[in-house]
Image (cartoon, rainbow, N blue to C red; front, side, top):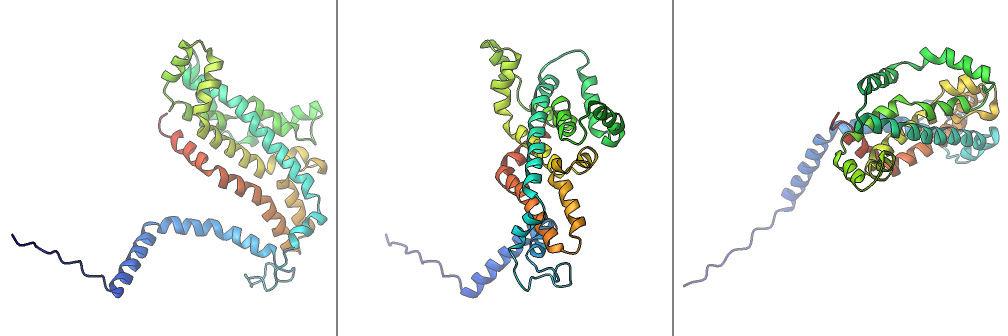
Length: 294
C-alpha cells in the first residue's frame, strides 16, 4: 500500500490577507453602526465640555474647538471662585441619603406587591403607577405649604424626607424585578422558620442585588441632577445649595469666563461618570431582568 502524502495548504497571499482583514473590519462597523453613531452623539458634548474647560478665557466658546493652550489650572481656579466643596457635600448628602431612603421604603412595598396576596393589592399597584406618571408640579403647592408651616424651607429636609415615605418609580422598578424571582425560595425560607421580614432580608434582597443597584443608580442620578426641588426649597439659603443649583449661579456670575463654567461642569459630571463605570454591569443586568416578567 502506498502512502498518500497530503500536500500542505498554500499560504494566503499578503494582498488577500489584507483584503480579508479589511472586509472583517467593514463588516464589524456595519453591524455596530447604530451603536457607534449613538456613542459619538452622547460623547461629543462631554468632549466639548472637557476641551472648553482647559482653554483660555478668550478662546472658550469661539470657532476654535481645539485648545491652543492647555490651562489645567482652571480646575483649581473654580474652587477659589466658589465653595464647590461645600456644594459637593450638599449634593452628596442629598443624593446619598435620598437613595437610602428610597430603598428603605421601596423594598418592603415592592415585596408586598410581588410576593404577598392581600385585598386591595392591585389597586395599590395601580395607584403607584398613577403616582409615577403624575407630574411633581401638581402636588408642589400643598407640599411647599406644608414645609413652610413646619419651618423647614431653606434646608435639604423637604428634599430628602419624601424618599423615606414613598417613591413610586423605585417601588415600580423593584416590584418588576422581584416578580422574576421564583416564590419557591420564599416558601423554602418560611419552612426553615423565617418570617416575612427575614425572608425578604435574607433571601430576596441578596438575590435582587442587580435590581436594587439599578434602582439606587436611577435615584442617585435623578437627585444629583435635580434642579427644580433645590431651587424651590433651598434657593433662599446658599449654605444648603447642591451642585445643580450652584452651577447655575456660577454660570451667572462667570457668564464671560466659559472656560471656568465648563471646568466646574466637568467636575460635577465626574462622580456620576465614575459611578456608572463601576456599577454598569449590575445596572444593565437589573434593567434587563426588570422587564422579563410582569
